Image (cartoon, rainbow, N blue to C red; front, side, top):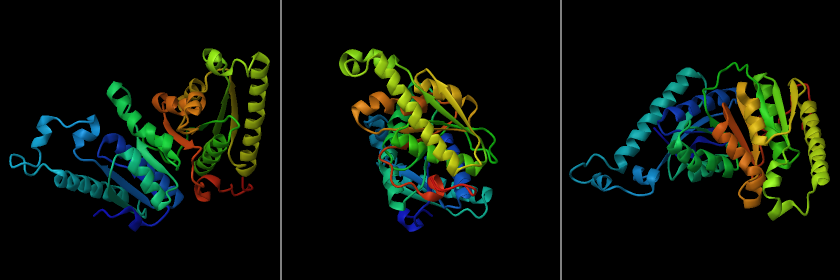
Length: 334
């Protein structure tokens, strides 16, 4: 039986579920992480009706027949019952695979990109987990309208899952670092994740002047000449290094390797994530100029990363200490 999200208490890890294979991977990933965090797991199905209108923006003539005398059983109530049955079965499977894990489910109205962040805020979720859909034009369109939009606008750390989580984990965590405030959030998340899973952390700082060249006539040519670009790059290096040192002090058990690249950040991150379990990036939110310089990095890695991706935004709520701010047993708080 499904319940309202508020009934399940605060602090649950949220996994988006729609019955697809990708969402089942997200549930598995979320369950494994919730068990490690000793948190509840809340499976959320975002119900839209008509389903075809939700996917394509219009209702075909054939869909208008649903719920009529010709097809009385095919109506919103029927599909909601199917969703609840799938959720109930998935909850039971999680309980069998993770004994002791408190698992519940809820069906909420609305599209996932809008409804999941609202549920996450309602229960003060430390993490939202959703499935990716692979490649292909239609799939990319769907990813752009759900997972990518959710990752860009959610106030909670959001993981887009590309493969089931393997516990115990052995592959490294990769994180992008650039000295910014949202980079600090991403680092805290990545350090905590690496410490909890006892895996190494690979920090990537990339600098490329190619984007500046392409937009020089319109935005930055007067402000950043070659010397200023070098100075700006050096400043970013210094700020990024300070962030890394703070993380190492807080999490001394985590082995950190540094990787500097003269490359577009998204390309460098994707290359370094070839053998990773998780790629962690920061996203600078909705602003057009910010998306041009920085938001495009998180968007690009969501499409091209070979592993699961965690995105943290600059409109993040206060991050829960048990997830992304807790100190290592031998270290100090960040």
